[in-house]
Amino acid sequence: MTQTQIEEKAVEILKEYEMDGLIPFDPVRLANMLGIEVKNARFKQCGTAGLISTSYNKTTIYINADDSPNRKRFAIAHELGHYFLHIEDKAQGDIKVDMWRDINRAKDEREKEANTFAAYLLMDEGCIRSLWNELKSVKRMIDIFKVSAADMSYRLMKLRLI
Image 1 (cartoon, rainbow, N blue to C red):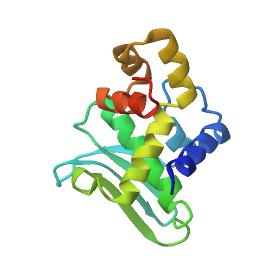
Image 2: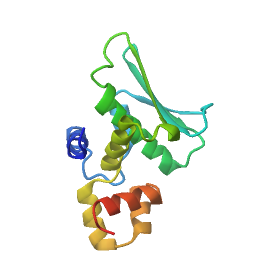
Image 3: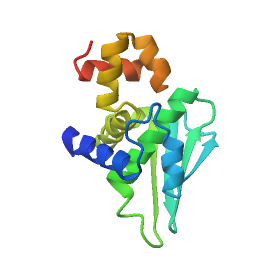
Image 4: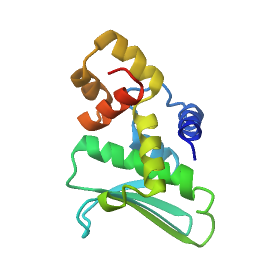
């Protein structure tokens, strides 16, 4: 998918679930609205931030219990990206689908797409632009949007605001 298609899908989801313009965006609330349970977990594989599992019409997102709250938020939004972009249509019936976020798989195209989707959910362009024009402070933006410094800086650079 193109970045434009991913952004359009994220915007569509935010509008459909009446979550557009909410700052900070709550990925757990969206997951719950979809009937997806979010659970803390401990993973054996180092570097695993999250996992989405769909089996027999039940979907669960597992996130690394040891991660910071902001990293957990991104991991949940990332797994929602997998749900909407990669498994939503396949998760019907008695099948099992697992996808996990692992630093070693970061170059996988689906991982990049899920990261892009997460950024659009957590840091809506209109909200970012509006607040940036008012605040001009990366630190304040991080505090308001509840994302990591790396995620906010990357988003601001992609929007050519810094």
